[in-house]
Length: 128
Image: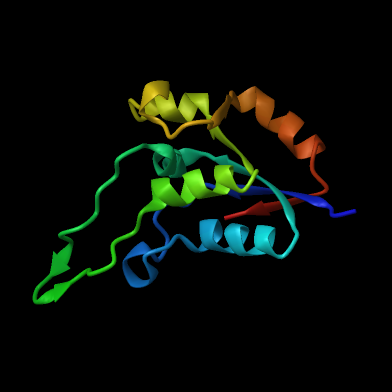
């Protein structure tokens, strides 16, 4: 039986200009494909990952243009589509003025006090 891992993603937009994917979201997709069992918790600035309709095309620095911008909210929806539960911290949403209705479908919420329960429900914790 696979051991379940809680992947906490707090540092947002890590390497998304260079790679067009967040490394923590990407590795979770890959590990799920290899048979891993995961839950994802988005907290801090990473709660932005769950916001629908993000658009990063048009990013340019001098003559360099990002031709394959990140689609992080679509990547999060893809995690959910693979059967991975994705949670966001309610207080972190509120701190950033994000409404529940702004989020991709089927994201779950927890308050900060509920994070402890997520820890006890998992055998491993990754913190990004």
